[in-house]
Image 1 (cartoon, one colour):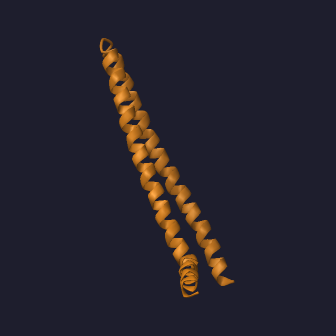
Image 2 (cartoon, rainbow, N blue to C red):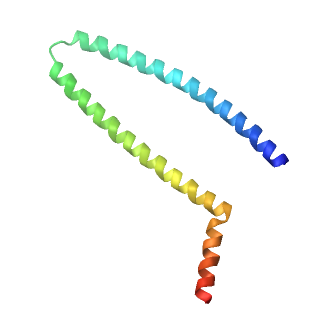
Image 3 (cartoon, rainbow, N blue to C red):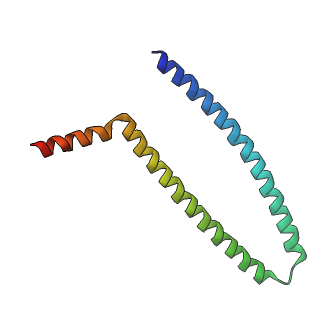
Length: 107
């Protein structure tokens, strides 16, 4: 029973710390993004003649960002699959499969 109590406390503490770190990180990153956006908009106002270039550059930046996000999603999916396999090994599911297959081979 004490094992469950330790898990619950750890889970709540982890959620609280994770939420706090996420909030601080979100605030810092959003402030940086807002500053970059304001700097970008002031630059675009000063350069009125190159509207076609800026839209082309914006499209290129969006494509680079999209590719980067796809790469990150792929990495996260791979990490999730790795953890899922580790959990399966820890829970003994993998051991049951191997012992079942060895029983089938013996028959």
